[in-house]
Each structure stands twice: as structure tokens, then as C-alpha cells.
Length: 402
Image 1 (tube, rainbow, N blue to C red):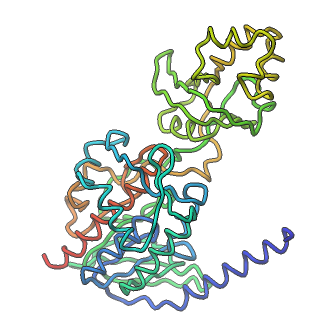
Image 2 (tube, helix red, strand yellow; image 1 turned 90 degrees about the vertical axis):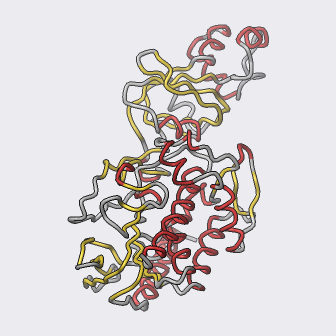
Image 3 (cartoon, rainbow, N blue to C red; image 1 turned 180 degrees about the vertical axis):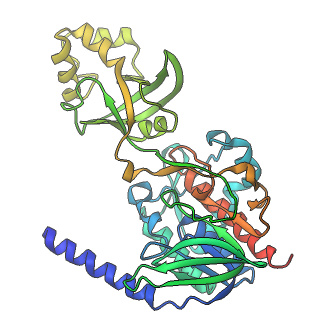
């Protein structure tokens, strides 16, 4: 298919999605309004609806669940066998919010959605199909079965109060640009990391949104020569010669710097001018490497990388030393439009961790990336989205009875 044909196909698909979104009638009043139809928002809407609430989801994208499709390189690493709150930026809050049955709760929910899964290295859990669309589709099917109103292509512009109710103002994204509003007894804020929170006069404090779990722009040797080469390496993040973090796994060389899961995890902690030191032979002690490199480095390294190192040093011993301590200077995040997670959002000390309700605003709940919570690669951030959606959705439905 030519580029022109692909663009035409995408345009036709978007037009179809917008037409479908336009056909959805949004009521003027509902029990629960969920702002954001991504991972956390869909789970929250399902749980609230299955507990008897009338639920409307307002989503800016042309379809709900679209953000899920890009996770895990399209394969959706939806959880991890080991969900440890200590891996998150606010471990105490995550521990209290997610409880001791975090993984069981998430897996039970997806089992009841009809999803099968498989485990890969590092405890990563993927849908059995290895397709993110499997996860998105079972969520949409369950939401529709629960009679959730999935109102896509509607950007929320303002959140406010109208007496005892919340008032949500939105405008259509399918050509008419008309504004609408609805009132809800309870509100769930589940906007993703890229969305600015339209909090209006609700008085909630947020931290700035910034991309993490992304490549890092770096200065250092051989980046152009090694573009596209992958290596299993140990990476040490240094700040003023002090170790900030160590990670092991795959590193990808790019012309602008470094990528790969290891670097994504370093990006959560890195600052400009930090150093990243790579050991390209982490399982091989330096004396063994020197002994094996008597003739060439090809037997212990990717030959392309070996030849690149040797071209710099012209000496086998020096090439081995370089391979064990290849140093780069961090300039900042790169390819931020593809960042897996965005740090920031509503500050956690404003929320009750057991139900994610705003302390000063009864019946307003926050979940997913809208909360200032983030974790490493490996299914941790989606696991937070699902569990926080479960907590907020149940609490929102119970808030109707208070």
C-alpha cells in the first residue's frame, strides 16, 4: 500500500470513528461522569456501572481505549507478576491504595472480561494474543454490556460545581465544535498523562506534566556508527560521581543518544549532565574479557560494536576497557511524543488513598495517570491504572448512596 493509500485509509477510519462518536447521545444528567476513557477510566466506568450507577465517559480521542493500543509496543504488557509499591515514586500512597491483593484483583477483573494471558521474562504479563487490541476490546465489550455511555470525541473544557452536583462542560471534536454540559452526582477524573486537567475552581493542586519512560538524548562516542544496534548491557546512572541507579537489560543505540527498556527506566531518575556508564559485557569479568580478546573482540561482542570500539582505540586491551565503561552525558529526554508515561498530575496528599477521593471535595475521585504516581517499565504503570480504576469506580458508585 502506498503512503497516499495509507493516509486515505487513516482518514476514512477517522471519519468512521467520528461519525460513530457523533451518534452517541450524551444525557444532560448522570450518576457518575468519568473524564477520560483510557485504561483507568474504562475500568472505573465498568465497576461503577456494574454496581448500579448510570455512567457517562467523556473522551477526547475519536474512540475510547485508544491509548491502550500503543502500550508494550502494541502487545500490551498489562501487569507484572511482582507488583511492588517500592518501585513507584510514592510507595506509601501506592501501598495503601492498592492493598495486599493488587495483582489478584487486577487478574480477577480481566478474567471476568474474558481475557487470557501469558507470562514472559521479568514477570511481565501479556494478553495471550500478544495484541493490545485484545485488552482494549474486552474492556469496551464489558463497558457496553454494563450500559456505559462511551462518548468519544468530546474534549472536557471545564469542571465545576452546580449546587450539590458536578458540572462538566465539553465540546465536540467531530466538526460541529458545539459545546455541551452534563451534571453528575459523582465525578471520576481519569485523564491520561498528556491531558491538561481542566480543574477550574475545584482547588486541586497539580504538579507539572513531563514525559518519562522514554529515550535519552546523550553526548558520547559512536552513536552515529552504532545506530540501531542492540546490546544486553549494565547501565549505571551517575550524578556528581555518585550512583543514582543501576539497571541491566537491552540498550539501543540511536544517533541522538540511547534507548531501550534500561534507558527508559533511567529516564525516570535522570537529569541533564548526569552520566550513563555502559558495561557491554556485564556477565564477563574484565580479566576474562581481556584473555578472550587476544585476537579480536568479535567472539565476545556484536562484531559491529566490536569493530566500532576497535576503530576508536586501535588496541584490544583498550577496546575491552572501553566496552566495560562506555560513558555518555545526558542532555534530556528524547522522542517525548512516544513516552510511555507522563509524570505529574494531582498531588497525592490531596487524596484519601483507600478510595482515591479528594479530601476537600466529596464525591470527586481521581485515578490512573491523573494522579502523580509513576513506576518503571514492565507492566507496573498499567497495573496502577487498572487497580486505581477499580478503587475509584467502586467508591464513585458507593458515593451515590452517602
